[in-house]
Image 1 (cartoon, rainbow, N blue to C red):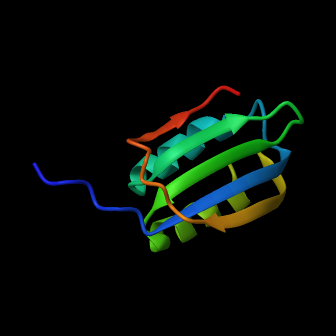
Image 2: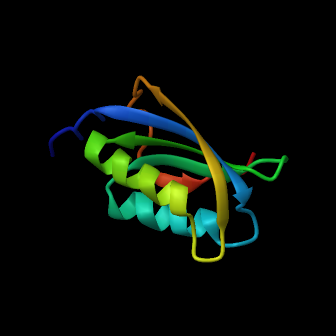
Length: 98
């Protein structure tokens, strides 16, 4: 078996708004997996949702567009975005509990 390709980019985002208790993490995991991304998503104590994702830049752009929309019941007010150097340490995309 060959090695998995090294991710091109890393997106670190914090989503503000009505984003907890509305299946935001579930839809985030589904979207990331569909796009072939690796990383995690977590609810934060302050009511925001934080996520880190690595993969192809085009896939991350589509993922970021999802974060601005959110799950069907979410109301996203704003998304803080940082582009970082990918580490390649994630095997898959999952829910993380902070």
